[in-house]
Structures are given as C-alpha cells and as structure tokens.
Length: 257
Image 1 (cartoon, helix red, strand yellow):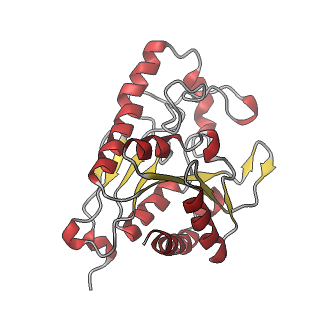
Image 2 (spheres, one colour):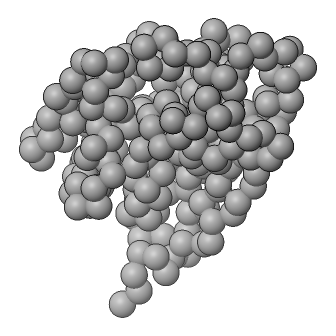
C-alpha cells in the first residue's frame, strides 16, 4: 500500500516562499477541500539582510515567527492532500499577514515596547525593497495556488504564544473567520467535540481584519477564508499535531462534504 507521502510531489523552494504542490489528480484519494498558507512559517532572514546584535534575542521566539506552524502546515498538507505556500522570511522583515499600509507591516517594537533594531529608521526605499523581495512574491505564490485549485476553502495556519505580554492564554485552538460564521462555528464545534479547548475568533478576531492574507486571496477567487491559531507550546509537540491533524481532517470532511 502506498503511504500518503507517496502521492505528493516534492516541495519547491524560492527565496520568499516554500511551495508544496498537492498530488497529481490521478493520485488523489479524497476531495480537494482546502488550500493552505502559513504566513509566519520561518524566522529566516534572507541575504542581504542580517540580524542586528540587539535583535538576536528575538530569534527563536514568537516575535520572529510562529513556532510549530511550519511543521503543522506540512503535516496538514500531507493528510489533506492539499497544496500549501509557506513563507521563508521572518515576519519582522515584513509581515505578510498585514496590508501594505498597515502600521505593523514593519514592526517597530517587541516585548514590553522594546525597539526592533531591524526596523529602526527604515527608509521608504528599504520598505519597497523588502516588499519586492519577500512580501509580494509570497502573495503572488498564494494567488497562483488558489487560482489553480478547485478547493472551496483557503485555510491559513498560525500559532500563538501561551504567554503574551505577561498574560497567560488557556485556550488551545482558535478558529478565526470574518464572513464565514457558519463554517467557522461548525469547525470549532467539531474540534471541541474531539476534546480540544477551542474558541471562535480567539485569541484574535477575523472580524477585526486579523485574517488579512486568507481573506485577501479567498475573496479574490470567490473562496471561503478561515484561519487556525494553535497554542505554540502544543504546536511544537509531534503527538499533539498528530491528534489535531486527524481531528481537523475529520471536521473538514464532515463540514464540507
């Protein structure tokens, strides 16, 4: 018997993104339900940029990327036989889950208001260089993926820190949405029934513009947008990811089929 890995084509790496094609149509074993994105998959700082000494303590933390999100996205892509696009640059270089005119596109402060040296005194020319090298190619890759797929849902995968600015977060999962109330509520209900501490539009709300990337591309191609948030201390655990992936696969099949 072939494994799930056997039906997938190799991932393609570009400077700004990792593209994971779904299986060839002849190898597909289940309906095409979702396309996947991971906006904060990497803390990589591509050349010619280098980490300022003052920012090195931010490496390996949620300020630089979403811990566990890349592994979770790849495992979901495998289990769902779904194409995926993952970023290959740190969110501190340019945040692909923010609009180009958003004040936090180039984040200036981190924990406790500490300045981010990478983004201090950033010029208009430097902003444009970052957008051209990272942000725009990443979004172009998502646009091409969604256009080539018949999947009805675009699902963005994120993780959140269990302790933010000194405040603990008890929930395990968040299902975020803007216009897809019925779909978001159905997925959330099934995840809670599977034993997860899941909440709708927490710890952030899609109704406040915080699923920008998924909503942008889903709207452009008349698809349905959702974002998943998984607590980082759980997302980095292989056993938790295995349990969660199985539950989400079941929830999507029951809701979309």
